Amino acid sequence: MHYRRRLRSRIVFSFMLFGTLLSVLFAASALALQEYITDQLISRTLRDELNQYVVQLRANPTQVEPFYSRIQGYVTRPHQAEIVPEAFRELPAGVHKVASSTGLYRAAIRKDDDYWVFLTYDVSSNRSITRRLVTALIGTVLAFSVLSLALGLWSAGRVMKPVRDLANRVRQLAASSKPQRLASNFADDEVGQLAAALDTYAVQLRERAERDNAFNADVSHELRTPLAVITGATELLLNMPELPDKVYERLLRIARAARQSTDITTALLHLARAERGVTEDSNARDLSVVVANVIELYQPLIGDKDLRIKSDLESQVNVIAPESVIAVTVGNLLGNAIRYTPSGVIQVTVRPGAIVIQDQGPGIDEQDLPRIFDRHYRGKESGSKGAGLGLAIVKRLCELYGWQVRFQNATEGGLRAEIWFYGETESS
Image (cartoon, rainbow, N blue to C red; front, side):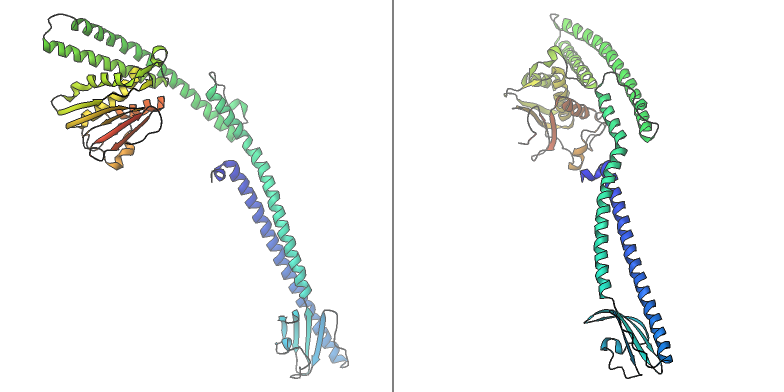
């Protein structure tokens, strides 16, 4: 089916179908015309011969009955036709088609008051000729079908050549750092118009990419600087002696929020640039250490809820990715679990190749699960919580680094989120 969807295949198939149908119609028309002409010719010949013989018979009653190799004549008195073969004897006047045990005939019959005259013509050999003609026409149809296929292949190749050239140049355009204009390589036809449209679209994409890169650079500079100032100031304040406990706790929360903001900024920059980071960000990270920091960072979100986070971080899992990317990915899943779980336990487990976060919240309707990663989508139980962007960011980060993320409703209740850093996604 995939082959038949190709434009070249459609052209070849249409050309072959058209040629075959045209050949069949021509053959059928030729056969019908031959049958009609032969039938009319035999009928007229028999009728003329019969009328002429009757005229001669009346002028000369001793006229011999006509007899040829394929034509047989009989002359009798009315109602005395015993000499006439039974197949023709009872037929009315006129020209008839007769099939008997001895063959196929055309019979011209005239029944006057004084004479009954029968003239028969053996057309069996004509049927044999017709069968040979049918065989020849079938062979002709097959030959024209093959010819149509060959012409279709040749024509499709000629028609599709500019399209293939355009596709090749588009692929080269994607791999080139300095793309060239496409329209200059094609004639001013439909393919040339498509190439011109692609040139216009490519220019627009380059302009948007340049604007995005400039924006990302500005964001990197403008956000990192104040965050660094906040982080430095809170570290100095935290090192001051004799700080009241409440002040110390609030400063600690500010420091954690600054750290979280820095991680989010870095992860979003990696995501916007579609790159995996460089230098120290490309080192392997201990997943358990990063997850422990994330749990500590998100602990204040619990607030007054009767909720606790239980962790099992015994497995050793190394992930090659920036720490900020891992922290944002895990943090969004953990924050989502805290947000939608009113009470109970959130279980965070690091297992070989994966991390599993399972809450005791209301879960998600099965029909809504496929949409959970859509931007700005929020489930029925979300109320006004969140902007619907966290899980979309998680999905994009996982796609960037080749991870697999999965959500499913747990059999015992709640929602189960899994990220697999290596291997296939599986449920336990």
